[in-house]
Picture 1 (tube, rainbow, N blue to C red):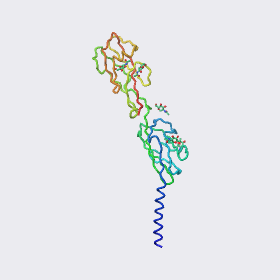
Picture 2 (tube, rainbow, N blue to C red):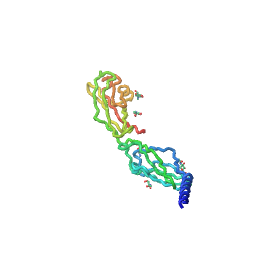
Picture 3 (tube, protein in one colour):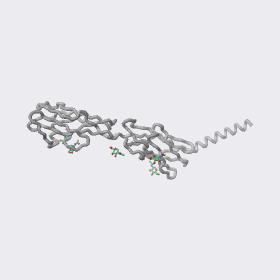
Picture 4 (tube, rainbow, N blue to C red):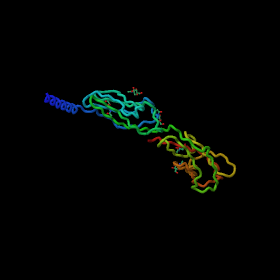
Length: 245
Ligand SMILES: *[C@@H]1O[C@H](CO)[C@@H](O)[C@H](O)[C@H]1NC(C)=O
Ligand SMILES: *[C@@H]1O[C@H](CO)[C@@H](O)[C@H](O)[C@H]1NC(C)=O
Ligand SMILES: *[C@@H]1O[C@H](CO)[C@@H](O)[C@H](O)[C@H]1NC(C)=O
Ligand SMILES: *[C@@H]1O[C@H](CO)[C@@H](O)[C@H](O)[C@H]1NC(C)=O
Ligand SMILES: *[C@@H]1O[C@H](CO)[C@@H](O)[C@H](O)[C@H]1NC(C)=O
């Protein structure tokens, strides 16, 4: 009796080992295991797709496997053709790059009859310019003496932006043109005598008279001022945000 039991046990072990060799785990086909999404993407939108297949033609089931990102996305089987399953990730809630990490790891669990694999996908959240920059210390108005030395820093403009990362990086530029979303008039007057308003005639004149350092907002005097030629400068300064990742 004891001998039979032992014999059965050995057979059973062999059976299991043969079975696990013949069934292989599912595999994933996708272009990349990462994708980028803008933080303002609409909820319910399809943000990523991948294919999965099973070498043994087993039926596959998909579920989400990362608890910290469970509230952000779901995994949905979109179609299947033969043994190729096409799945999508859908956005469940509005993303907010400014208050949460910019890269999130998503785990999708894919199950066949015997195995469960975890497919890791990186979601890179792109910041968008959802917060406009605002100038501080408005209005800007300053006067300069005619004999102000060249290269003197004559004024500093300053803006703040609550967007994080490159989305919150501010570049200052000056332009005589009036069409810009974020702009503020800077008035530069050359002091002495009655001040009269001179509309900007040509960009080159402003460009040659002042320079603005784009990352600091400091305006320098580039060319000697001449009250007789021009007593008043009035131009626009605006900030621009970069939305590249
Ligand atoms: C996914 O499967 C579909 C349908 O079979 C196919 O058209 C597509 O090229 C596949 N994509 C990848 C990344 O394998
Ligand atoms: C998201 O922001 C980008 C850049 O500002 C814009 O082009 C796009 O239309 C916005 N998308 C949605 C869904 O609001
Ligand atoms: C995932 O979200 C999409 C879009 O809202 C929805 O159509 C789909 O049924 C959802 N899938 C699951 C498994 O909840
Ligand atoms: C300044 O304005 C001119 C004319 O409107 C325009 O062509 C140019 O691109 C502007 N410069 C910047 C830096 O936006
Ligand atoms: C203004 O000056 C910059 C460099 O100092 C030059 O690149 C740009 O072409 C000039 N623009 C005009 C309108 O003169």
